[in-house]
Image (cartoon, one colour):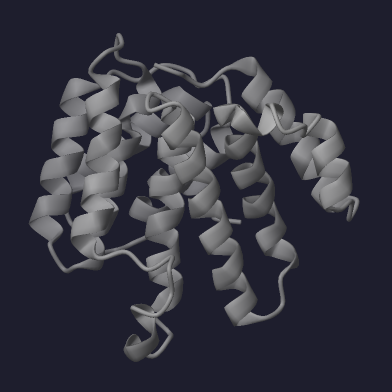
Length: 227
C-alpha cells in the first residue's frame, strides 16, 4: 500500500508556497517535471489534486469552484487507476467528495445531478469503505481512522446520528492514536468537521475524539478552527 511519506509533505509545502505567491500551472508543472512519462505516475496526479485543492482559495465564481472540485476528483481517480493501493489519493478523493456535497447544499437540487462532482450518499460511502479495504493490508496507523470519520460525516449529513456514532466507535476501537508526521493540516479536517457539528450528542465519543486528535496533532481539538 502507498502510505503517506515525507515527499508528500515536502510537495505540499511547495504547493502551498506557490499558491500564496500566485504562481501558476507552468511553475507547478516544472516542480513536478511533468513529462509524458511522469504523468503515468500516480503521485503526479495526487500532487496535482493537492495543487488544485489549494487553488480553491483563489476562486471567485461558484460554478468555477465546482469545475475545480471536478478536477480534484478526476486527478484522484487517475492516481488510483494507476496505483489501486494509493491511500493518500483515496483519502483526498473521499474527503473532497464529502466537502463538495456540503458546498452543494445551497444550490438548487435540480442541478446536482448535472454536476460530475456530485456523489450520492451510497457513492460517498463506497469511496470511504474502499479506504478501509486497502488499509487491511497494512499494520494499523493512526491516520487509518480517517475513513471512519468520513463515514461518520456522511451519516450526519443524512440525518443518521446513531450511525455516525457507531462508525466513530468502530474506528476508535480499531485504530490506536499516534503522532502524525505528514499532511497533518489535511488530516485534521474530518475531525474538525465532526467536532464542530453539534449533532453528535455522545459526550464520551466526543471526548475520545478530542484525546485522539491531541495525540495525533499535539493540540486540543477545541483550540483549532476550520480555516
